[in-house]
Length: 278
Image 1 (cartoon, rainbow, N blue to C red):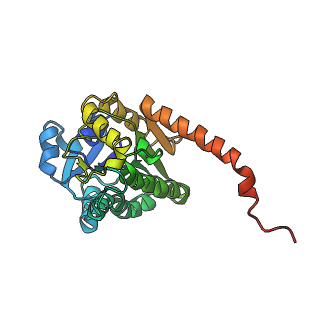
Image 2: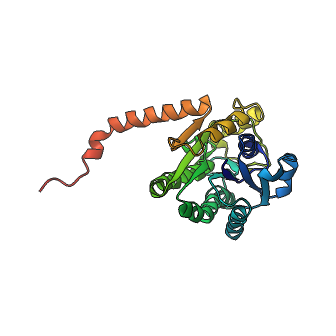
Image 3: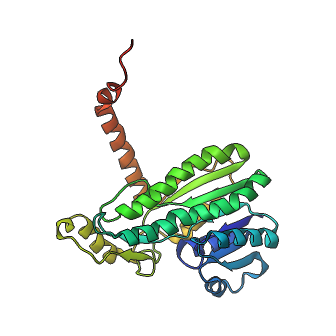
């Protein structure tokens, strides 16, 4: 039995992770902006579930929730940074205000939770941090540029964290889901910029129309994704990056091949920039 702390747990993939962890016999501290929504979703969870209200952009509240979780369950073994939001629009279309809002949740919110929980995991010399990224955290796409940038940031600090905290017994995994059938493309989770620049109709505009068409018809099963996350949690050989969904796996493979080919093509230029031997 492990103790899990899951943010953004009232719906979507977060709620499925809570369900899978409970089904596997774990205890779960589940957070969302409104704890009542979690309690309503899991009315029969009993003492294995403790729900708390948390806006991850509130660092002081994140500290309090972590302390309350340890008081309630005695420890924390697995942390899932799942709370997040999306934004759709060409890079030029997205306002400064909207950009800062999505960074506040996806990047600074995740960091708030990490700063609160890492002292606990360091003291235990054990734990597993699971940071939810996206296929868009590894592969940029038209219309997703600002969202991509938040998830690229998550991947960057997670990769560094793995090197920093690994020697202390703390594992880190970056989860990169593809398209899963959740509410992510709904207006409640995804902010779509109303400013539209016609020159981007065939790039970001196509993405905007595609998102509307595939909403609630995505190929991925969130319950299966959650089960996969629970399976790898706490494993000694847990991956640094875990792609979920054939669509994500394929796009990551294509990017790796493209980067390798481009790197090889321009190798001579890269090596030409050193000082000449004296």
